[in-house]
Structures are given as C-alpha cells and as structure tokens.
Image (cartoon, rainbow, N blue to C red; front, side, top):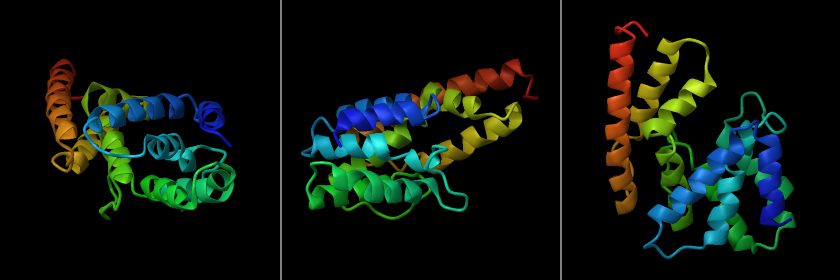
Length: 188
C-alpha cells in the first residue's frame, strides 16, 4: 500500500478533520524539521496514520486512540507497504508516542517531529478553532479544554523551530482567548 492510498483512506475515514489535520501536521513537521536529518517518508506515513484509532471505523472503546492507531498501522497497513521492517517500527513508535499526554520519551527524530508538529497544531488560533469544532455546544467546556491542552503542551517543545512557533502561537492564542472572555463578559 502506498502513501497516496493511505492519504485517500485518511480523507475518507477522517470525518472531515483527519485529513486536514494530517496535512497541517506534515507541513509543520517539514517546517520544524528543516535543519534536521530525518526520513521524510517515515514521517509522512506516521502523520497520515497517527489518528486512525480515533476514526469511527477503527475506534475501540477503552483503547487510547494513539495505541489503537499503532495497532491498526502495524496490523492492517504497514506490512503491506514497501517500508523496511526498521522503518515500520519507527512509524509505529511515532504514532504511539504522538499524544501530548504521553510522557514517555521518543527514541527517533521522526517520532519527535511527529509529536511536536502534532502539538503545534493544538496551539494558536487553529488550536482554539479545533477545540470549538469538537463541541459540545457549551463554550465553557470548550474553553476549559483549550486551556487544559495549552497547559499540557506549553514549554515542552524541544526543537528550536518548534519553540519559536510555540511562542508565536501562544501569543495569538492568548490574544484570542482574552477577546473571547471580553466579548462573553466573562460568562462564556
């Protein structure tokens, strides 16, 4: 199975958010990884597969989406690609360790890139809009989730370009959240 087929499946299965999110994460990985030596093909596979465990077709109650995404990739996708066994293992690690709530360290630059690019997509205006899109129709709950994600990510990025982007995105986020508080009269 080639990357074009995986992209198509991400588009079909991703409920409208999965493909766009993956495209943004890959673009972020390219930007923050510009000065790093890494296997872009491995990163691309990991990026397009990293959230499949959250898609309805593959979702399993009680199984964290990152672990489920790794399971799906290892069992149903990666063995049918042209990736070497070593590269498949790197893709699997990058998928499993991408979530900001996972404190385990990465062991490859590819895993680090996927993780930090994914985290950046949760910051800034895009991070706010993503959380609001998830719902529910309760601004207070969405606002609190935005704050929780921001706090869970803030200060943890390690790639120099990612840290620079983090600073910019956090500043934008702060400005929008302040306006949101003002316009809602603090009620939300």
